[in-house]
Every structure is written in structure tokens, then in C-alpha cells.
Image 1 (cartoon, rainbow, N blue to C red):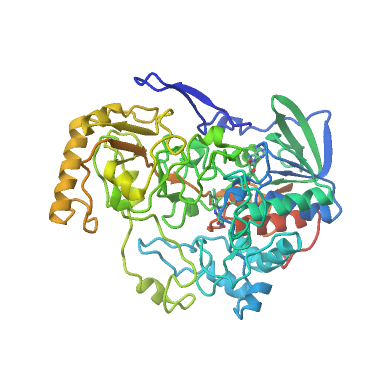
Image 2 (cartoon, rainbow, N blue to C red):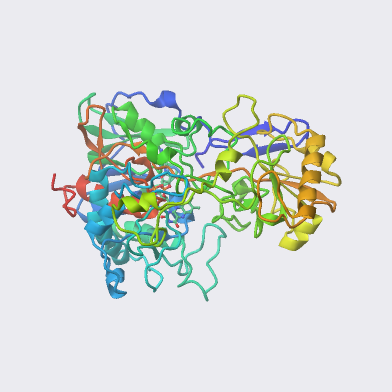
Length: 595
Ligand SMILES: Cc1cc2nc3c(=O)[nH]c(=O)nc-3n(C[C@H](O)[C@H](O)[C@H](O)COP(=O)(O)OP(=O)(O)OC[C@H]3O[C@@H](n4cnc5c(N)ncnc54)[C@H](O)[C@@H]3O)c2cc1C
């Protein structure tokens, strides 16, 4: 595993624990300096792909099938990236065979206009599509349906039903486009075992997307080098073409020549604290529960290696805008990794690093959420930012001024309040703790013990009184002690709201349950950093563009490491991998080659 680990002592608790935190150690900003090309290469291929996720595997297969020799390097012990941990909801549209089968009238033009519609705004006023790069979206719209058919031809089985609007964010409002890759009988990385045979054809999962692509890549002869982390990209001169990459294989260094192209498919930057803070200064180190971790990290190594040889960045708004799933409310509490749709079970190959599964919250009425100082900050039932999908806007007409004009301003500021902090000048909001009692445990049917919770590493605490509970909360990111009297006062006030039926502080709809029966619990419930939507500047062919607006010869990028496209995930990544792989070997794609 190439992730750096930082051992630390939990001050005061006397417990030593190793917690994998994303850190700059693996790819820091200082590394964004060009390296001199080597005199000798240890390996060579026509095309070198960096990363084996949703963009990388399609890129590698496409290039290999077009006749190129292909080496794909992957930093982790296994393939798949965030894509294999994903829900497998794939919004490829523009007139796919499945859309046609179910009588859904979609086209590249409709998809393009959807994803560039200035008039779509969320209830908080943020637009999903206004800042999308038209050239990049045109290429996606034109290649969306071909990418879908290509996935099917390469072994991906989609759940046999009409496209819907489930599981996507920012996929356009005109028609349903969401399709779902069936898990089939692939062992799931979340559990280490296949899904129940009864549901294998119906369960949408990234395992059902990535394992067939891995098999296809191996079948056509893509050379996959696991535990090979790209550390630099070589360019022949500051304005010359890209020549290859440097790689670290568990301490062993080697240089791989790319005779035609290098494709960056490294998956983004959410795990690089300094990099992500360019877009949002609030995202300091306590946001350590990244979605997709600990399967694979997003440490911005692709972006930094690109920047080092002159690449530019693009589309910053898409990362900062308050829509979609860039930042999410956790769905489980009591463990470091609390993303709502990803629960690690003890059988998972990465459970030693996940350490706990977390307690899934069925009803946010069963707990209160407090900041580091033991103070509530928002209605616990509040949700995260919303996004635009089919049916999000009733009476939608593309480009109509009425879409924005009719939007009812109704911001959900749960995430913003959680990130607001305690007024001590620190940028991040600090840890958020779910506080609950024995009655809540019974109502939720939780077992608040390992492997469900991570007390050892400081993500879960128990005590017989609220005061003692506050005193026990000591861990790396709790930079100020929680005053016991604060927590006692907060709970007493909340209990009085249950009596009166009115939350006078945050308007929680009719608070239902008092917190009064020992033992009491504090469980990690800090927001989760999820998508990267800003990254390297690319053009319609997924060629990387420099600070003068010129193409860097031989360098391509797709997926979360590429900027200019605000959309959650798999479709964007797979389609750009398809485009990059084709163009890297000079093959034609739909219209993307026109200009
Ligand atoms: C839990 C979860 C659920 C999701 N569900 C959905 C969903 O249902 N639908 C949807 O559309 N999207 C979903 N997404 C988002 C989607 O998975 C990602 O947007 C998509 O996988 C991005 O593809 P990518 O190729 O850019 O990155 P990834 O799939 O993350 O792949 C990047 C790969 O590059 C490797 N890598 C990174 N740096 C280096 C380096 N220096 N050298 C070598 N290798 C490197 C990584 O280890 C990784 O394997 C989900 C994400 C998560 C985390």
C-alpha cells in the first residue's frame, strides 16, 4: 500500500493508534517541479496510463485495442480506484440503446444543452451547469452513448430496467439517463464476498463496472503494474512533448517511456489537504473521512505532475459551488470513514485500514450533533446540497428564464454550519460529534462495539454521564477540550425542546427523543469530502492544455483529475477515458476530433 501512514498518540487517552490520514507526504506541492528526463528507461510502451479507475481502465483498453502497447500503473494493491467502491450508477445518455428500448427520446444535442443550461439553479441559488466548459461538454455529449455501448461490449452488465434518476448528481433535467452496473457474482471490495445471488442482477455496484473492465484489459494485453505510483511526468523540454513517467514501486524507482502518450487518470485531489484548500479554505485536516478511502486515495499527484511540466488548472467554481456531492453529510457515525453509501465490513481486504464499519443512522431524530465545544449548530435532520437531475425541476424548459425565476430560495446549510467552526480563527469546523443515549441505541438497533465503532483510534467514546463523556473526547483533531458543562447544558436544553415540541434554536421539526438514559455516546460525525470537480485543463480530445492555452503534446487527462465539468463521477470519467484512449493513438471519436 503506497499510502503514507502517520502514527500518533491520542493525547491523554494513552492509546496508541495508527490512523491512515491523507497527507501531503505522498504528493506535496513542492513536488510540482519538472524533472530532467532519464538517460535510460527501464520499461516502455506506446501509451502509459496512470490510474486504474473509471477513466484509466477504459483509456487503456481502447488504446490497446487500437493497436498500441499499453502499460497501466496503479498506486494501490488492487485496481478500481473510487470507481470500484462506487454505487455503479452511471449516467450515460444522449441516445443509448437502453434509452431507445424504453422509448426515452435523448440525443447528444439535448444532453449538451442540459449540461450547459445557465438557467438551472439549486434552492440555495447555486447553478449546476453555468460554469461548465462548452468544448468539454460537447465532447461528452457526443461520446456518451458510444461509451455506454462500449462498456456493454466489454462485459459490463447493466441492471435490466429503464434508465431512471437514481444516484446521479448533475446529469441533466430533460430525460432519465441513470443506468446501473449490476454487481453480478464479483466479490465486493466492501465485504470481500459476492452479493446474495438473489440480488446480483439487480444490485448497482462499482464492482460490476470495474471487474469486467479489469478482465477485458487483461484479455487484450494491457500490462497492469500494481503498487506502481507515478511520481513525475517527463517532458523533453519546457515546450516539448511528454516522454514518460517516473514510478515508485515500494521504494524501487523506475522510469517508463511512453512513445506516444501519457494519460493521467489519477482521480482527483480530495485527499490532498493543501490542494483542496485552493478551492475551499475550510477543508482543513479534520476532514479525514474521505469517500472511497481507504481503498484508494486522491492525492492530486496527477495534477501536481501535470503542473510541474506546464499544465494549467480549470473550472474552479465547479469545486466550490454548493451543489451535488463535493461535500456530504455522513451516513454512518463512530468510524473515520462515514460516507453514506460505503460501509466497510470486516471481510473487506482494506478493513485493517478502515478499522470499523460505522453505525448507519436511520433517523437523525435519534441523536443530536454538536461541535468540538459541545454546542449544537443546525437541525440534525437537515441534508446536504442538492443537484439537478431528471424531474428536479417541474415544468422544465431548457434555457428558460423561468427555471431560475421560479426556484424557491430554500438553502440547506447543514454543511456550511458544520464547517463554521468555533470562532477561534481556525479555518475548518473541527470535529462534529453525534451525541446519543442507550434509548437511541435500542431504537436504532445498534451494537455500539467493535467492529462497528472505532474507539481505539478516537472516533467513538462512551461514559455513564454526559460530563464524563465530554471529558473523554480526546483525539487528533479535537484541538480544544469539550467543556463538560457545555454538553450538559446543550442536552438539557434539547430535552426541554422535546418537552415543548419546538426546537427554538434550529427549527428541527418537532424534536422527538430526550437524551437521558446512560450510557451516553459520542460518535464521529464530521462531514465527508467526496468529489473532485476541478483539475487539469483539457480540450475536447482530453489533451492537457498549458498556461498559454497550447496543447502539451502527448499528454491526456480524464476523470476527476480533469477540470471544466461539474458532474458526479462515473459517466464523466469513463467517457473521458474512452475519448483520451482513442485520441492518444490517433483514433477517431464522435465529433471530438473535429476541431
Ligand atoms: C463511495 C463512492 C460512491 C460513488 N458512487 C458513484 C455513483 O454511483 N455514480 C457515479 O457516477 N459516481 C460515483 N462515485 C464517483 C466515482 O466513483 C468517481 O467519480 C470516479 O471513480 C472517478 O474516476 P477516476 O478514474 O477519475 O478516479 P478513480 O476511479 O478514483 O481512479 C483513480 C485511480 O488512480 C490511482 N492513482 C492515483 N494517483 C496515482 C499515482 N500517482 N500513480 C498511480 N496510480 C494513481 C488511484 O489509486 C485510483 O485507482 C462514487 C464515489 C465514491 C467514493
